[in-house]
Amino acid sequence: MALTLAISPCPNDTFVFDALVHGRVPGAPPVEVTYADVDVTNTAAERGAFDLVKVSYAALPWLLDDYHLLPCGGALGRGCGPLVLTRPDRAGSGQASSGQTGTADLGGATVAVPGDRTTAYLLFRLWAAERPPARIEVVPFHEIMPAVAAGRYDAGLVIHEARFTYQRHGLTALVDLGEWWEGTTGLPIPLGAILARRGTVDPVEAAGWIRESVRQAWADPEASRAYVLSHAQEMEPDVVDRHIALYVNEFTADLGDAGFAAVEALLGRAADAGLVPRTAGPQTSSSRATAWTS
Image 1 (cartoon, rainbow, N blue to C red):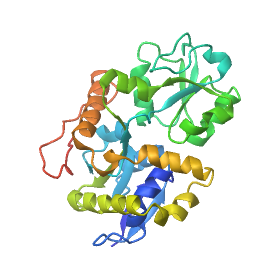
Image 2: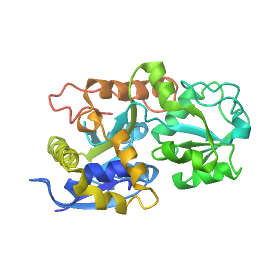
Image 3: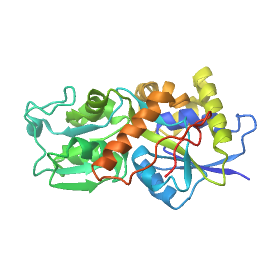
């Protein structure tokens, strides 16, 4: 039987999963792929809609009864955090610098965010706890920067390739939430996780398939080029390459101690603040493929 997989069309996901999707991983089953933004996959995972699924780390507390967290294949790293963008006339002199806002303030502002259970929004809520905006609106990711530039929102929370393109919209970075997180915790930024459905997919086998897919992607980047570009139709090849270089890193192959510590810190701080249900920490496991339970 085919394995159902849901990932985003972003270059990091298509690069990582190319070999698995196209049947080049020995011993792996055939794969049926759905491409969707992470806000959509977060919701679909609550229904148990997929065997393997890319979700936000922020959504884990609602998903771990039905899914294992895999120790590979996701997005976690340094220097890759979400940005809060605004127009220069609102930002004043408060541009992003080590996570500080300068004179800028979101009090009374309406902020567009890409999903209410995204890691980006959870980081934003932790950062803005003492200075929350007046209103939050969930907006499809690709609409956020044009809408902020047009004045429909005072600020927007963006992820992924927006780090490389926001200046084209005449916007400025009010805060880099990755810099804020790293400066506060010293840990990498946990963004997107890969989950395997309990009772359907063996998590150790799934981790092996994904690691082999990652290994092949690094060994021969050109093999996935056409596939990656076909799903990144609005990105120039240079932006695609920078996107992959930033988000596909050592944590993609193995979260390791630092990666698991980052996930624990994010969800622990969020639970302390009453933003997510509390989860148990990682269990001892040589494979770490069944690392978290609810």
